[in-house]
Image 1: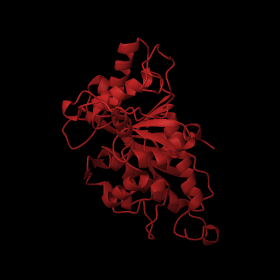
Image 2: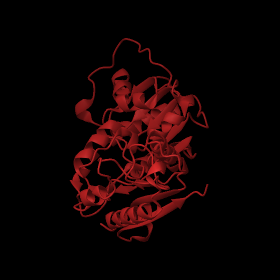
Image 3: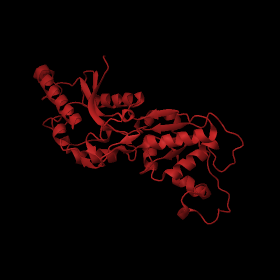
Image 4: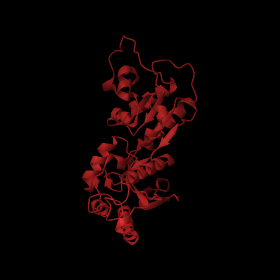
Length: 327
């Protein structure tokens, strides 16, 4: 609630400043005659700020209506920055449109995995993706062209997944399997069946991307691993926070360390609060400003979110963080 009140406060301050700075009619942009060009953008978190699980915060709609002009357009560039990674941007935009009652486009949404669009060096590699939801569609929307899902890997090598006795195959396939060598592992978000994903990811790491072979020696450093979202916990409808992707990754790190005696290394770590994520969000803010024809530089970003201090055992605190970049 405090974050939403802060958002309303930002909106009110913006309106006051825009009224004071309004230029003569001859200097206003076509299509934006009711306002001057904004000098700042907003980065807004979703989980625990706008919604708890699937339940909207009561003040969410009211707060965002203050950021709209009479045409139903945002008076400042806004990007919704979430560590969620279980859907494509358009799906999240549709959900936000319904929750907030204002039109949200996919260009205003940044998922945990969105910055991977910039890292083209991975796009043509054979990558194993872990997560839930339409992982193949997510990977392709980012730019990956050669994607292996956990289901594809498990189907090719069914005897590798032995934890769930109800899913064990009766016999191994007598036919040899032709399977591409995996060159990188992309961790989108926490999966549904942790034991399967943990087992198969470790298999791929220990065999340098070829889980059908018997490892003769450990290849270290291992093949690249990219982690999107390292949140230990997240806020849903429950009275206490729920396990997030960071807990899954923590399990993976400790299993690898226990087996090999070496640390699991990450090629990239994405999601809040990584610097890469905020740089990409800034790019989206500037792209919105350019699309609207706003030529005045955006020199301040206001990030509206929540801060959870698990290490101190404190309860969830909501606050407003301000990130500024002077031009």
